Length: 312
Ligand SMILES: Cc1cc2nc3c(=O)[nH]c(=O)nc-3n(C[C@H](O)[C@H](O)[C@H](O)COP(=O)(O)OP(=O)(O)OC[C@H]3O[C@@H](n4cnc5c(N)ncnc54)[C@H](O)[C@@H]3O)c2cc1C
Image (cartoon, protein in one colour):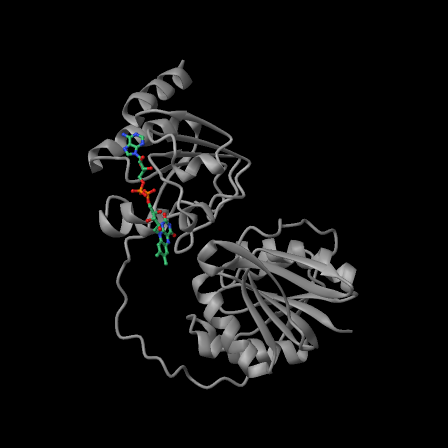
């Protein structure tokens, strides 16, 4: 029986995707399979909705290299008779999806942020034209490779335990030789999964004033995120905190936007927030077009008062 195959080099993203794959598989009459390759937490895949979990002890998979993983996944996909392959749209996943599609002669969509079945076909939506619009796209080839943004599915706890199949993969050594590794200084916060995001932009005057923003985030049990200029130009926060087209997207229950004009390249990252609150001194800022609530005012006056009110 044909399958829908799920892979991500990040286990938690793969488990989210499996949750969506179970629903899609039901509608498309496809069995759900997962590829748990390399250092994946194989046990964690046991009850996530996959009928079969493919694994391999091949040494070439110990470190992620996109060309090697693309070859490995193409072999797994053939064995699993996969017609749809969903890859987590992480930075690595996006490269992998293109390479895999090329190997399989499949159609490919990257960065899908929704997947629906219509008339037996998978219909994807994704940002287009720099986030100014949403494109609805369908792959017309029989084989489909789609990289899906993290957070599109929810992990499931299935009563059925997946069958584990160890596959023999013929893989050539990676043509990429890693000569050194250095820490990128990533902080380990989960912006994409945060319930509350306190986002700050160029309305902030000095790096030291971030303390005031952090206090508000702490009072709300949330995380501080930022617009791109604060991370890439000012370097006040790590790039992992950037929200938007070149950063991360979240689905928080609450997003607070402080001193942010609301350019589309930023707002694509928070438009799925349940409630958006803005503080901006410009009554004509774009951010008001998407804010549910807001205060036209100086963030230096508003933020300490908000924090004090929350702390009671
Ligand atoms: C290809 C491309 C990709 C991009 N990707 C991203 C991305 O992923 N994420 C991203 O954020 N940007 C991205 N950008 C940049 C984006 O276009 C905007 O330049 C950026 O989002 C603006 O950041 P900002 O709102 O902090 O700054 P500004 O646009 O300068 O806005 C600052 C706001 O603060 C308000 N303000 C000033 N002082 C105060 C105060 N004391 N109290 C209250 N309000 C105050 C002002 O009224 C203004 O509205 C990208 C751009 C390009 C071209």
